[in-house]
Amino acid sequence: MGHDWKYAVGEDVGDIGVDVQTKVEYDANNNPIYIGHNRQDKTDNDENWIIYKLLWDANGNMIHKQRMIGRWIERTTLTWR
Image 1 (tube, helix red, strand yellow):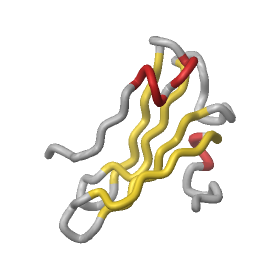
Image 2: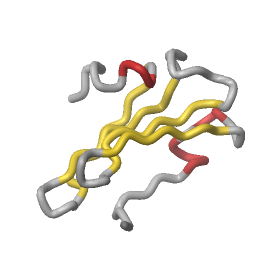
Image 3: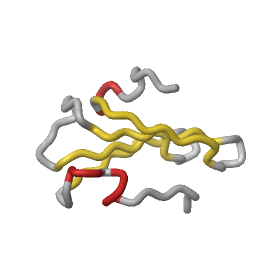
Image 4: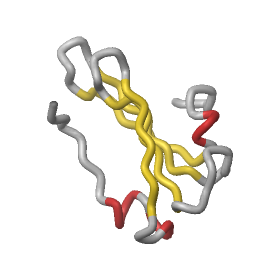
């Protein structure tokens, strides 16, 4: 399933460098709803994850993308706008 969202690792991940881990959480329709990037040596509890929250409509089209810095384990409780 191809999704119409893109990010440039060098741009969005900033100074993390090339040794990046990526975590993804999917919804019931297999759409990514949270995407997180951090250095390989960081844990899910590290406070410097670059986290994206993606919102999808009923047709599977991405309708909103937000970006925050926080802990991966707290992604669902961050104050998203």
